[in-house]
Each structure stands twice: as C-alpha cells, then as structure tokens.
Length: 253
Image (cartoon, rainbow, N blue to C red; front, side):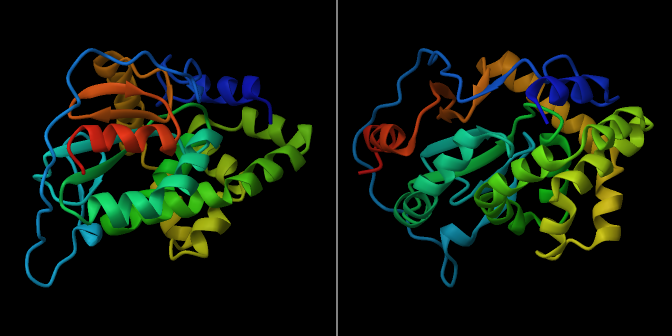
C-alpha cells in the first residue's frame, strides 16, 4: 500500500485528525532550547526484590514508562509502529538502554505512540490491548516484525484495498489489521482474536491516540518519528549512537 493510500484511509477515519498523514518517519526535527547537560548522577537502587527495568507503568500523558518514576533523567520517545527509523532505533538501542541506563535508576524511558498513518492506529490499539507491562516489549517485537507487515500490504490486491476503502469507518481498522497481518502477529503473542476485535472497535482509545499525536505536535513540535524528549526538551530525531551521548551529557555517566 502506498503512503498516499495510507493517508487517504487515515484521514477518512472518524478518529483521525488532520495531523495524521502530515508527519514523516525519520524527519529531523529542530531541537528546542533548554539545558540537557548536568553533573554525573550516581546509580539509584531499585526497591528490594525489584528491578527498574521490569517496572513499567502507564503515564498520565498516555505513554508507557519503564524504569524509576523519579529518575532524574526522563527520556521520552515519540514513536510510530509503522516507522522504519523507529524499528532501526529499537534494534540498536533497546538492550543498552534497558540494561545500562534504565536499570541504573538514573534514566526512565517512556514510549508515547505517534500516529503517522492508518497502519499506526490498529497497531497501537493492539499493542495496548494486553497488560500495561506488555506494551513496551510488544512494541519492540512489532518493530522487529515490521518488514513482514509491509510485505503483506504490498501483496494485497488493489481490489482488497478498495474493499477496505468502501467499508464503514468503524470496520476499517479491523480490516487493515487483518490485511497487514497484525491480528495474527498479536494472536501469537497472547492477544486473542476476539480480544483484538474489541480493542480495534474501541473508538475512545483510537481518539485518544489521535489526540496524543495532535498534542505532541503542538506541545513539542513533533513532526516526525522517532523524536526524543529529554527532561522536557525536544532533542530531535536521531539514531542510538547520537542519542546515547546526550544521556551521558545529561548525567547518566
């Protein structure tokens, strides 16, 4: 499916604001002003019997935070499950970010979904369909599987895509999920098909994802993914080898 068709479907959905389809994967945002440097910070021990890397909570902003909720360095990623640059970042970063930075208690990592196109809406709804603790691991697995999703979409016939366009709006997300292979992907990871159907029909959550995207655009000038926020400052879009030094500069050293 072409990006143009992605945008056509996204803009036709009841839950999708105009922000959908205007952002881009890998677009280099201009960093905002603000200090992200600081003195070295000592490691902060997790409570007895716990690990910061296993501590995952949903935040008031609609994201999912891994690590010390009071970490002095707060890293937020605005990411899209359809974004190949986000997939590359996940491949490069997840283990060192989790094991070296989050586990130290100095850095928390929060994933906030950003809707680039019509694929991101069902993918995000399904990633959030299970437990809170599963959202970040499922997102990492989805990014690794992402090339298969694009293969499935490219293999879909023009007739099948036209059928999706013609469906009632409340049925389009489930149809996109089926054609893309998302339903089967999540079913193999514990999200049963009837459970997935209920999540895909949840227009309130879909609207919240769209609103979250709009808010990110307005509050942090997020125009592409992945975009990173460190302690409230937009530091731009980059790969792990450029972001890691910024965490160290902020005190994670």
